[in-house]
Structures are given as structure tokens and as C-alpha cells.
Image (cartoon, rainbow, N blue to C red):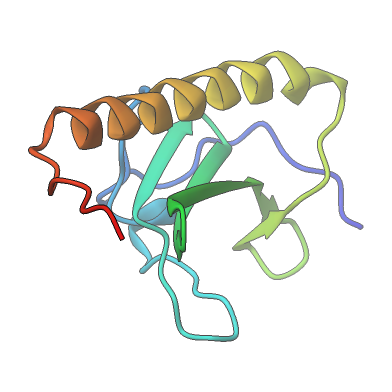
Length: 121
């Protein structure tokens, strides 16, 4: 695996601070094999959290995937990795904490919505 460089990624539509971005470095978000898209991105520097929503019988469930961007020195293109070095771990923990807060906010918003009354059998 190529060693990441210290060069900053392009700043097309992605934010260099905490918050959501339209996609990693201006690219559309990646999708899984079923065609689902992440519902939210949180990015700080080269580390991004993608938050996925899954509907279950007990309500929505959220999962988070993390990726790190780096510039491939051979092809001079931006690539992503799910491997993190020592220098990325504190940023990873910060992005994970922000993802946790965002998911808890979604649960709080859902509990504030009016619920249908439960009908006895």
C-alpha cells in the first residue's frame, strides 16, 4: 500500500472542518452492493465517516463506516483506505464521536415526532 502524502485534498464540495459533505472530495458518495447510499458524511481532514441507515422491525438502525483519503504518488490520484495509522487515530476518534452525536440527534428527533397510539389486541 502506498504511503500517504502530506498534501491536502482538493476542496471542491467537501468541507475541511467537521460537518457533512456532499461526497468525499467532491465525488458522489460510494454505495454498497445493494445500491444504498450513506445518509450523512462527517469529515475532518483526510478522515471521513459515512453513516448508513437501515430500517428494521424495531425502527431505524444506523451503522458507520470510516475511510481515510490519500494521494497515490504513482498515479497522482486520490484513493481511499480503511486502514489508519498512528497519526490518524485521534482524528478517527473525533469523527467517531461526531458520528455518535449525529446518530443520537436522529433518535432524539424521532422521539419528538408524534407517535401512533398503540392499539390493544
